[in-house]
Picture 1: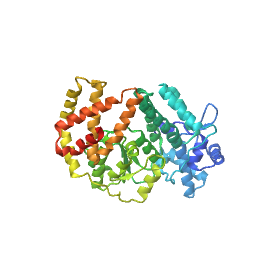
Picture 2: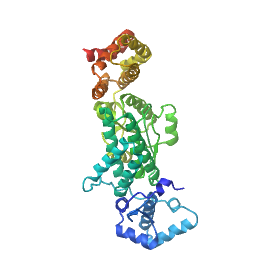
Picture 3: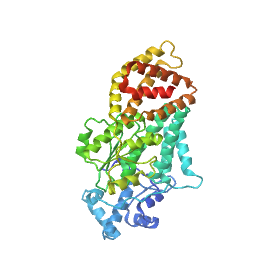
Picture 4: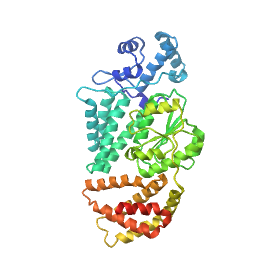
Length: 440
């Protein structure tokens, strides 16, 4: 059964020509003489093709490559359809990989203009306008271009606006929801995979940001790879069982935060034991370049622009990941001791700050204790307390942009250091030394 998304008229003639390599005149002749494909028309009478129309064109091209004339290929299509079969499934298409489509450049900078217009619609909570803008974009450009050069930069800019304090969390969540909904539809409308090597994509435990891995899933599906998207916060429990059942040739994981980089490391070590290659990426690895060297896997780089090319190279030429330094026994012992004492440290911070909590509200204090505790544990798990420094710089900038006193951060850190000194012993020297250096 064909999904509704695959039947939706979305692509203009230019996008179809780019995707199939067929000349416009040939395409029009097929439609006129044989009735295949049968595109819809826009209000301006321009052709609009569905994903199924594109699949039909590729099916006909494949039959020609096998030696049939176009008329005989059309006869075969109608014969199979008359027997109640879906020709796309009865005689599958196995086309070459899609052409690498360079980002289209329109007169007057249409791509940046569309990205800005979509972003503004999201910030205004105008769902109808946002959907109309994307529909217009799909009529002009290929799906890859819309995803990479309109939706992605808008989402990045909205995220930066949230960090700067002039975009609300609600606006950011709304934009992400619209983007993910559209990506989900694009994944559903992608052609049936024609390759055999399976790929699993997902987020490690506690990682909730799914835009980038969903985008990777879409791009791989468009290139014919059978790709399973596991979503956010994939638990480590029974993950090995999933690997045994699916037997992927590659697993791709994405982490945006320091503490989810640590849970990604847990997954990476499990995959290493199973002999399954790992590719990974995410914002935290761009922000802390040294971090990638701690993960036993293949780093995909700081952007998604060439990610598919790198992934296809890994699948075509499997190579072991480079050696990674193991977390030292001292760090493992420090982590174990810190986790045992972490609730007591949090309670002591409350006691220290309660008489004169300064500018830190109880709600913010709860968040701060959770956040700092997670990231101390992550830095220990990853084997280097210096990884925490970027996270604190980010928080400091966030406070400044929101006109909150940055002195509140130092006041809080002094209280946490005092509490840590009261409950940690020499086993957690790495934590105590880090606080001493930070606050000296």
